[in-house]
Length: 280
Length: 280
Image (cartoon, rainbow over all chains, first blue to last red; front, side, top):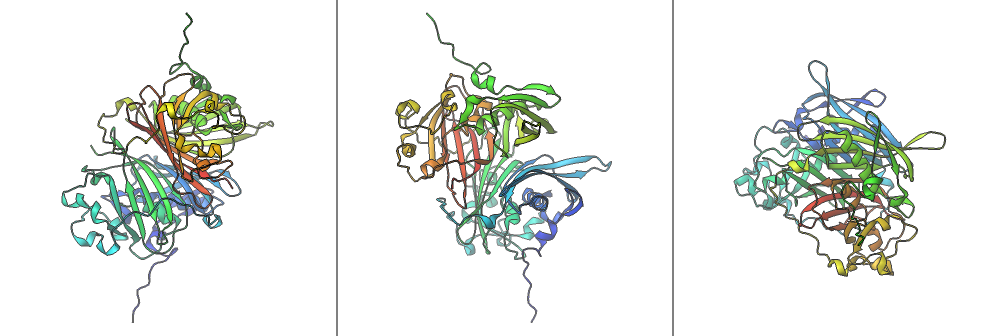
């Protein structure tokens, strides 16, 4: 009897598409896969994960603790280079910088994203957990809606939706049927479609993988990320993640999106905030 | 009759102590004033403001929109150099990088803080405000407590307390009388002691000027900032600011502090999140 082989950490689409190869000290080659596009744009979380992996190679500590990314120009599927710099190494934390660049036809280098990040060892953290935040009130997985459920259609061709298993809370899909809630909220269950469990690098993808809260605020159109800072606080347990995103300050043509990622053991494994330009 | 001259934006202690002078293209001299120390350490928000001013000089856009700072080594009062780099300039936004460095006795350069920041023009933003966040429930100014009220004593010599007019909400000063609330909250009114109104650069100071929430969580000792990302969303109106800080994820020896700054017109003018190491 043929048995489906589930992907695993280290052997999955995500790992292959975020792999980097060292070409010179601190310089890595990467290939931006067209498999992680949303409406033809390469997903910002996928790019963040790629940069995170390069810095994980470059720095003496393995796990991203806090990653600050400023998005400069739109990335395109295809070859890219990541230039890293070690800023400081310490006993428990190290800080690095990374630039993802691509090249125009005439060879001009264009920077896409610049990142500052501090890394540590998540396995070395104490298990003293006094989190007072509570997991989001989320509809059970079976009641949440994914692309196959019909109405939740992402406009345009979006390869990333085939690689993610996102099920949105029915309370946050009004936008998909022309009835946005008016609340800056987006919630859902998240896992990788090929079954790979989450890890610190896939969490960098996760915080930017859901539809934007602007959809529920009745805005249509692109909500480009200006800057995204992510804290990875814990190695996620196996199993699906719950992602809850909130916007409370849509003003002056910009908005913030605060994301929380909770794992199957009810640990708050990642928190992020991005500043994005609101659609016009 | 002698009249006290109130300090103003551009002519105040804060402006003098965050001034930078250009010494070479993109390179600025600064003096880290001992006037902004807390328990002998130079306050992180003051340093952020200094870096913010240098980037404001270097970049074509005047106002910080989002500033991501990674704190590397402890700064000392005295001379410093800020090296800036223009990363990208656009029509409405520009991104830059800045490093604050100091020099050891043998001349070795040591980096203190590295910052990535995206700047714009706050006066060019639309006045379409749909903020759903609400100002914090704060005790009235007259009921809030400052250093002169006795029990709110900051341990150690702290020159910064003479330059700030901070009045803490009585609900968040239990730590000062040995009765911490156990809640990760710190709230208070904030203004500069010499009467200077707030501006985008002083907001960078404001988000890191209150006592740490760890005090109310019953922890004593140093809570050093690892990384601090601040969004400046609006030019603050004249008058005192309300600052509300919340911690919900004290875990594994680290904690996050989320700060909101509200102005006298009830605008949410700044939001920040820092990752800090919890006291042992």
